[in-house]
Length: 314
Image (cartoon, rainbow, N blue to C red; front, top):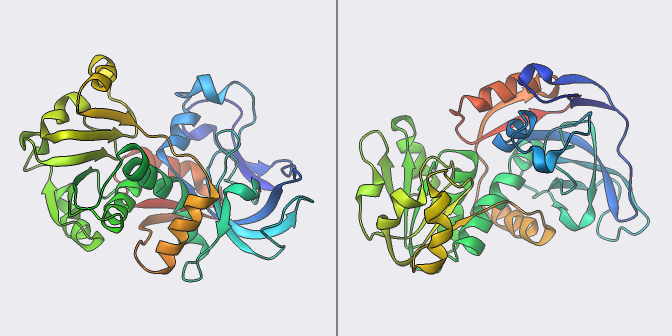
């Protein structure tokens, strides 16, 4: 199969497009002909070697967690899917493997693609939507009627978080974005929008039940006074400033919790229901051919993407 791969950590130039062995098919796995994948910030952080303790020194590596495509083969223990089914998933083995023509994925973490989504839209969903859902529902314990702030609401994760917060019953969702994305945040369903160049939300005291930092540009220590009593601060990556205050938060009534997306078919099926009902929509910034994944990584690293970056696999 053709795939994107690299044989050592480094800059985007280490990414190669070429032949790699087809993935193995385990008894409870499905083999998928990938039609679209995506680039998430974690992909290039792994490529740079920032997650070395978990990514290890075994090469070559194929990046990518998200994929959407068609089932071409099934293991003997598979019961939920058949050859020809359209499916999407976040790969649960290791830290990559989706930026390729073929991907092997456990049937437990796959789900049917909603009928109203094409492959590119479906590939934009799993990791970002998982992160948003699990940050708000599980780590943030969002309750109906609560007030939520989403920092980085125009990002891939943040754009899903605004929509999912409304689905989960938040009474007020405040989106923090740059000046160019104020209108977009309103279209996503935000009740209030803060242009971070004009106002620092941490100056607003005792206002939010839950703050979700979807882009990890703030900190618990700076944000905690903006939380109400028993408020929660959830972040995708803990800020170095919170080395002390973060762990100490367990002893206070205002908690800090990091979120790391976990793949499971139940959550993905739930997201699929919301997507098919039009309650949640993927936001795609730009698409690249699979062979141009290095350029897609460079674009992602600039930090200006609005929504998701999708890779098209021909």
